[in-house]
Length: 96
View 1 (cartoon, rainbow, N blue to C red):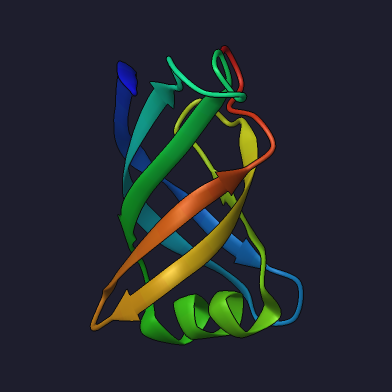
View 2: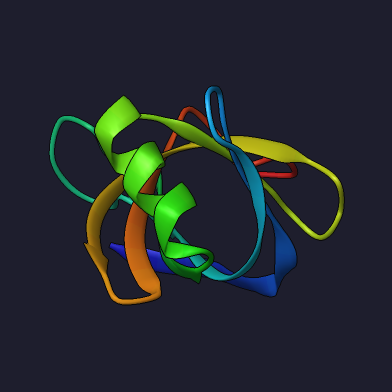
């Protein structure tokens, strides 16, 4: 994969049932360069937010991460440990 960009900032992690929490994130955008999905963008990252909101997001399967630009992205939290979680963007990242 080819690294396209890294977005670092502060925003909000929002869930349907528990509300939202401020969140700091680092989001890496990659482009697949080989295989049947060549050209596809993949966005993975880590975030820090309130533990209760991250757990709710993990249980719900999806949440919304509002970037510092105000753009919302759908995310799926993959692991939650302490105050940090790793996530994958579902769909696209605005601007890419």
